[in-house]
Amino acid sequence: MSAVTTTLTEDQLALAEVTLDFAQEQLAPHAVAWDQDKHFPVDVIRRAAGLGLAGVYVREQHGGSGLSRSDGVLVFETLARGCPSIAGYLSIHNMVAWMIDRYGDDAQRARWLPGLCSAATLGSYCLTEPGAGSDAAALRTRAERQGDHYLLTGVKQFISGAGSAGLYVVMARTGEPGPGGISAFVVERDDPGVSFGPNERKMGWNAQPTRQVVLDGLRVPADRRLGAEGDGFRIAMNGLNGGRLGIAACSLGGAQSALDRSLSHLADREAFGSRLLDAQALQFRLADMATELAAARALVRQAAEALDGGDPLAPRLCAMAKRFATDTGYAVADAALQLHGGYGYLSEYGIEKIVRDLRVHQILEGTNEVMRVIVARGLTETLR
Image (tube, rainbow, N blue to C red; front, side, top):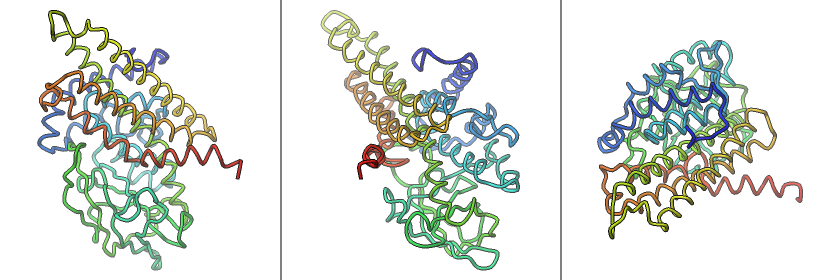
């Protein structure tokens, strides 16, 4: 696992080895077919749960693996070497499980965490709306208190796992405009009033469904609320700090796979009487790709350690890591396609799939433009 880091503990090395074996045996051989068939391999996700990969951050007393963010970025990078789409969904599922463990009460944890940690129940995160993407605090889905229930009405957009997932953490407005009027709720797939749009036709991430979640007069008990009224935006943003690290790590894993494939391809191909791998210009290209991935990996690990340690700069570092790693991962994958020549453009080689999968990482969990806003705000706030 030298491609990941040289500073892993023995436990992390063992975790990386087990996860890489799973990625190579259970994900990589099927990734292209899943993409082409738009197949969501729930059975394989449940096998991953058998290794503790569906409750990565959930505390052990609640059925999870109790791992750190530093462990988690290693898990998701390694999984993405097999399939970035499935690794990306597992990152989101784990974000949902963490939010319930962190902000739920004992009854909520007992009700939902066992199913999430075993992947008997899949989870989805519902923040984005058709008219509220980057400006998440402007969301319009409403939750009106009616006695001991809430009535939820609204539409959530671009929801990974929607329709297949059994549980949804939904952000809805319970109060005034802005972030202070948002609360978080847990919605179940079979609740009356929940429906789903068609599976979106996408550039990448085809091995997981993406649908609208439509809430039409959904009536949920008050005990489905996570935290207090008005806590929803804070819960959502804290969940996204970890989610951004997960997606950043998935970009690293997908790009590392593309780089590894490029090395093999250039070693096997000849032009003008010598191996392509022996051409200095191509060696320099490979060197730059490896260097940029190493730099991105170091920043992701730094951000993960900051989040583990409760560093007040952690949100800014997570934004930096997400922006840099997803931009770098996509650039490295695109360079790998170029190094493959015409073969890189053929679906059977799997490189063009990685390029398509990694492109959306620059958009989801907060666009990279929003990541720049977060970083800039942190740099300039003391000067206002």
